[in-house]
Image (cartoon, rainbow, N blue to C red):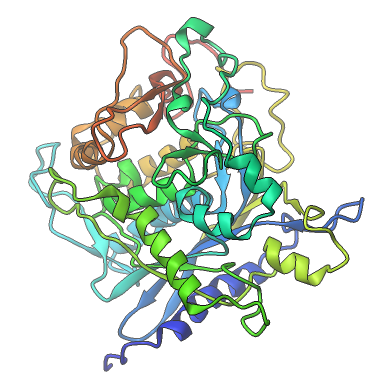
Length: 481
């Protein structure tokens, strides 16, 4: 089959967005924004990964998510069984990782439309003469659609131009450290410094461009240790989206194109449509925030590189975006629509394909009935996208690929620091610096070294990743609920 001519970029952005819309429209109603009993409509953010064949133009939305929520740091899971960050971009990336787990099994059998076998890039750490390794097919590209500008650095200029002056004054007040929250379970106040003070709190001082920021943006929301979507997307331009564990089986998977909606009015035909100058300015801000602020990195290992995505805007509105909800309900004041409580996460090929998540667990589950923070939640309560279940899925993939079994007592923390993941850790060190860990100290989070481009990155303490594939914590003899 012949190669298609280079696509018209505006048409291509529409095709990518429409692939996500079509997938979303096919999902069940449960978990989607609705009108609440008090009459307030809900809104949310949509993000989706779309693979595209450059030769044929074939597209497939393989991972999709909605969400705008993030758990406070006091609810950080000790067993890896609760999702901390439920913003759409982050859930979509976790969904993509789960899709990759299943696709690797197809690739091993030569049946994947998107992945192919590759030579192992360096001697296998287990000493075997041959180990399976994969990468994205040469003619395939990875696109990410987001229905609005990602929170954090990429959206600060747009916010300053469009938000209410009174709200702008609130967030542009002099910078101050984030309030020190109470210590998490299992720690003491003296053991819990407040490294979040080194990252800006949400939208606080939003004219301080280039700063790392924690979620959420609202000033009255509880403190979290989760970095903004702008910060996390920026790391993917160096590390890829596949994560630490999959880096042992898969070449870095970079986003080729980022398509963003919600910039300007919902309809490009309105009289208040943004000028081309404004759009170029916001696009330049995205480039600055998502990769230019990193600068040039030294010391990246083979296969890793700095791969900035092409950044494009689409005028097509997502039906449940805040901006579009306001156009559908002109009777509502700008503050009437409420962010949806439920999140949806879709993984192509899985059964069921979609999962509804509330407070970091499956809808219908409860965190209040947990017997202990050291006790893992049951399977029926956990999301398949939590760290614990992603680890279990990764181990199942290794078994499918006939790789040697890993020690049953190996913890998530240790596996991420294994020889098989050394290249990924080297790239992460170049970007974020080395983690400053104090032996014998249980801090909720620590800072990486400040000399790296993202050297003020917040890292949760070792005790939050020291659990095995059953969610068991060493030296703690407890069973799941």
